[in-house]
Length: 184
Length: 100
Image 1: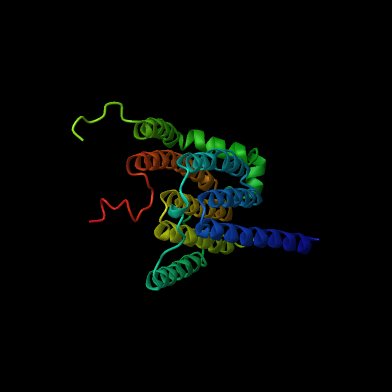
Image 2: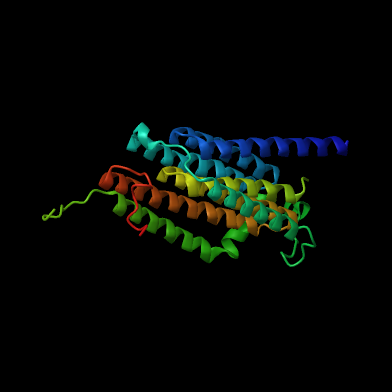
């Protein structure tokens, strides 16, 4: 029954899309940063589900492991560490003109993008790796790994250097000043 | 498969919400989290478009975006801690040294 499977696919997508939009809204408008971080974790899990539905299993796993598991825990650590006082947790503060301008420009941006991709999709890639070809080549993770470690080997190595620099920079920025300036 | 336009519209919504938060929240940690939302919208466009045109380069790009997001979060949160230690606040209304 192909019609039924299409119905289920669309239903799952729309359910996930509604939940993702709702969680993103809650991330932005929640007053307390801990609540926002928890909603962001839910958001990232739902996005990982969408990636899995797009046959991108490796990206889905990395999304859960690295984003939800590492980056958001770092955010939560810092929120707990700072122990923010309630008066610093002010909610949204904006003028109607600013918000209106932003909404109108974003709607234009959205319509531009959607209409730009309506036409033919030539020139965006050779299109040689449709799902069937990926399956015969050894699966999605295999194909991504082959791309990552052959065509993208230099960006891969540069990413490791970037991570090293970020580690050193984070330690240097966050550590206490050892020598206090004498003339204060 | 769900049409790729739906994924683009969803990504536009997430990006809009993230941009809204990054511009209008006054808490530096909230600004950083909104930037993470925007990066996730871009990731969704990469994966959906790559799937639609039969290409896995988009997924490789997502891995690099996640790497850069991790570095950005680490350095940004270190800066937040340093600012909080120096000024006792992370409210962007008070931290306005470069606003002119």
